[in-house]
Amino acid sequence: MPDENASTNKVSARIVAIDALRGFDMFFLTGGVSLVAALLIYLFPESKEWVNYHSSHIAWGKGFSAWDLVMPLFIFIVGAAMPFSIGRRIHTEPKWKIYRKVITRFFVLFVLGMMVQGNLLSFKLKNIDFFCNTLQAIGGGYLISSILMMHLKIRWQAVAMFGMLIAYWLIMMYVPYPNKSGEWVHGMLEPYNNVAYFVDLYLQGDFQDGTEYTWIVSQLAFGGLTMLGVFAGYILQCSWSHWKKLGCLFLVGVLLLILGKAWSEIFPIIKQLFTSSMVLWAAGWCYLLLASFYLLTDVLGFKKLVFPLVVIGSNALFVYIWVMLVNPLNSFSPKLFLGFSDLFGDAKQVIYYLCNYLFIWLVLYFLYKKKTFIKI
Image (cartoon, rainbow, N blue to C red):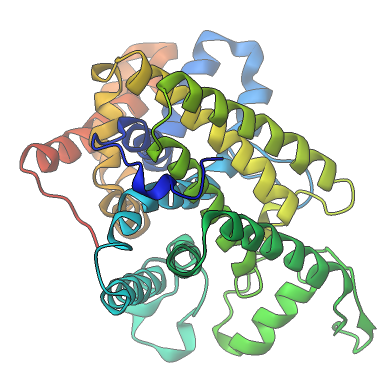
């Protein structure tokens, strides 16, 4: 990791790798997963089972797919960008101004989360789900990480990060709670039967979303993952050579994969719970992906190659809300492209999803050229 003064050794250039990685994540969220899956199955029919596994969310405790990485990667990228946003303000602005911005952003993300997945726009109290969405997980992780960055040196930020993940593990395994039968138990890691779900149900009551996912106690995991992203940002921000930064990102990624796999022996990788082992495992892949994009863009200079992803990533919040609220793939794309794609025989699925995605990308490109970026 960089030294304690890394925050003052800033690079002035924008890290294209972060923008490209954000676009890569949004690409899959906006229908890219269907396009890639259709293309792979068309080219390699024998890969269908493997492709289907990695293009869908995995059932509880059955593993971790590429599609499961989309949410953790979104959270990680927010953290990776923080040293280049809030980090540069810590030494130049009063903390109350930074807190005002951080709290405002947290509140907006929380409300947007309720809008896109919590039925807030139904305007019916009985239908509202209070804490139920990725944007809210990002908001909580952002708030926690901002506080740590403002008040702790880097070494203590690392201690706090590991402390949150260890505390989450201890809570999940050793804090007792009453199950549905009224019996006090601990260490249960089953759907609808674990201490994190009990806390969600107890505190949210009828406003709990009824899914297997947990949110309130899991804030410790969201904060830990965001901080792992922050440390990646510190690496990119410091004054090392490109190759040294690249090596560090790769090494940290491999170490996190090893630690995540080892921890999973006693605290399984379960995305619905965002277990600490899953956080380390997902962060390992996030580091390796960031290293790959850093090699491609900032080291080798192939920035034009990732321009389509930069266009997507430049409006990540707009993309996410569009997908969650409007869902264009299900709303009107079939009317535009379904008949057209039928003309291509066995390749019709590829053409269908390609046309869908080109439509979405052109909208985003229009916003990019107009310098219209939806941010908080």
